[in-house]
Image 1 (tube, helix red, strand yellow):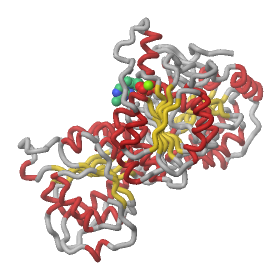
Image 2 (spheres, helix red, strand yellow; image 1 turned 90 degrees about the horizontal axis):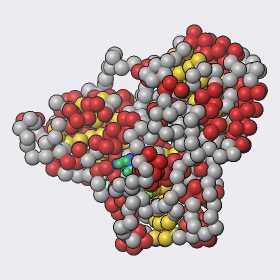
Image 3 (cartoon, protein in one colour; image 1 turned 90 degrees about the vertical axis):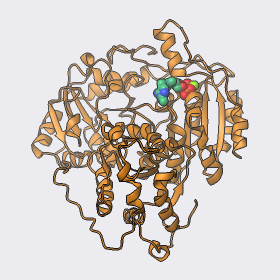
Image 4 (cartoon, helix red, strand yellow; image 1 turned 60 degrees about the vertical axis):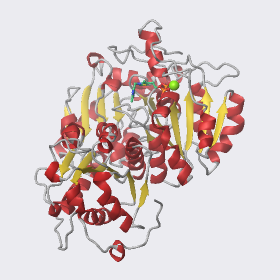
Length: 573
Ligand SMILES: Cc1ncc(C[n+]2csc(CCOP(=O)(O)OP(=O)(O)O)c2C)c(N)n1
Ligand SMILES: [Mg+2]
């Protein structure tokens, strides 16, 4: 349903059902885009959406997983919560992967699921599933509405909880009898959540401690996580880093928080991080983690993680501090508020010039590298070209696998909210629908989905949305005819036993695109990339590009499982 803004719900509404109450509540929240799929238990909600024509845009994916990843992409780019609707039973369970994904990466989503009528809950009614039980461990909070009168308050609370503190997904399960019931009185929506009061401002004593530690440090380093992006703290971060001339390493999800092209930026750290970023974390004496959660793909073997450092950790979620890494200076705070407090302190010149010079030297001496045969498309080179042709300005989304790591390594982000990837859960099939949502979240930029030939086949049905909406999303399949990351691990750690990781039977992706009335291209050579890709990327129409790349390429550097940050393989001078 494509609708124009403007018409008022009140004018069009004759019956007032629980579903109308929900729709009013969404309008009150300023929701402009819904990602959803109808079904029996949400028919009253879809009827209310029909009555509210003109109030929001409803995107109909072709699978609920597409809806929720699109909502994630929308939320990451627009900074507004993604709103999802699914029916009970299979509709709700199809959302589960996306809910878990959003939970791991702290993406604010509000997900409305239909439920069977209250009177039959627990009877194995048609399309009944216990979505409360299923989503309890993968949501920030979940509700099952028990009474019509609760609905407006619950919706308000759900948006509040999803978007404040550490963001995350909130599920609101609505039994069909509640959304269908008629009401005619004014219902209160005020809420009071005394048990939920996230700590936003840092303790000034802890800020003093960090400031003092900084002045004594000889080898300080800043680790930037996505908490900086969520709290929109990039300008405070840049001021802090520049004041003290601090080297910066980033997590996968933190890319873009600090400008990737700045000299002080060492690159992504972790399993496929740069030599200079990883060695900075290994050798530092003060590690300032801002909004990262010390995930195992970042730290490698904890025994060798920052072994000489005193650790300061700024995080809005107290549960993250000290969870994986002993922390000398815990600071529970919003990243923006903590950085603003630090920036109020007197700035001193640190005694760390040798350290900064060494790290910048590492960056030059041990850069990312790849082979460059004459004709064939090398995936790393392809990503560099995509960066070049888009001037580093595209919104880049990815699937999970080798192409994701190459995108993280070779597409440099100078601003936040341009990089949308599935970090914590590592969800194949995320990249393409996320690009659709990201495009809708920022129509002024082009979204480029960098996807694997494996992952794309998990959610390619969403080509229908591109067909319908003509969104200028570009899908670049980094086609190595393999589950490349699996193949790489089998090559390195399973003596080249390629068990079920080579995909030599594939659809004709060009014809597939064309069957959705989308321009399809297949590139086999560097020349084709160079002559055709710039134009395709600049066009305002959707396109799918099947890039045949070398199958045997691996992602380097790499920290093998169980190894420490200093034990990278595939480092070259
Ligand atoms: C839903 C899901 N299933 C399985 C995996 C395990 N896995 C991680 S990477 C990968 C290979 C991905 O292949 P492809 O999409 O072609 O990307 P490539 O690594 O080749 O770039 C697999 C199977 C996963 N991350 N997600
Ligand atoms: Mg592949």
